[in-house]
Structure formats: structure tokens, C-alpha cells
Image: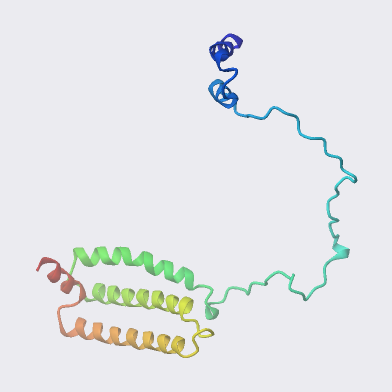
Length: 179
């Protein structure tokens, strides 16, 4: 190994008066500084902060208390995330079945229409909750939420009428696709 390392140094002997950084980079040395660190005098050794024991607990009822999580309850929205993900996953086979067997089953059309409308309603409701919060927009927030509810009901009524009195949702998509 020493013979391998000595060969580049012999070739660089002519660079002694030139740039010392070039010589160090050419030999593959990573550090340019070879000086020792300056001596530092510490007056007192550092100690870690004392850890409070169970008997020396902090004062309860302050801002330092951890947030308590309520128990899961369907009435307060803790199961909505699972419902939204299940609905999104159910849309994949519904769309595939609707594309393959278009117009043959009213149940497939109805379930696809209902799933699409509920999925869209939940998505827009999340957008309104995030960006048009009632605390920041006391008039526009509730108006947007009630407008979304009215549009959802109107869409459901329109899809029901289209399903019962016309060709249905999947047949419409198939006809538009082949037109």
C-alpha cells in the first residue's frame, strides 16, 4: 500500500512551490487542515438538566398538558376517514363493472351514481372545511356548505330521473365514448 501511495507523491514533487491545495487534491487527501485544534479551557464541566421524578411532577392544568384524544365515536366523525377510503376503493370495481356491463343492470348504475355523488360531496366538503372555515368566513363558509348540500341533492334527484326515465348512467358513458 505504501508503494501505491508514494508514486503520486513522487510525481508531485515539482509542485512544491505551486498551490498546496492542488497537491492535496491530486493525492486524494480529503482534509486541507492538519493543525491541531486550539486548546479550550472549560471552567466548569457541563451537567445535564435534572429530570423531574414522579413526585416532582409539573403543575397540572397548564398549557404543558398533553392533548387528550376522545374515544372513537361514529357520531363525532372518528370513522369518517375509514368510510371515505372504503368508498374510494369501492369506486374502482364499480367503474370497471359499469364499463364492461353498461346498461344491463339498474343496480350497478344506481350504486355507481350514488358512490360518485357521495365521494364528490365528501371531497368538496373537505375543501370547504379547509379553505372556507366558518370562523374565518362567517357568511361565505355556511353559504358554500349549504350550496354544496343543495347541489348534491339536486344531482341525486337528476341522476334518479335520468336512471328511471332514460338510458342510465353507464349506457350514457358508453354512447358518448363510442360517438
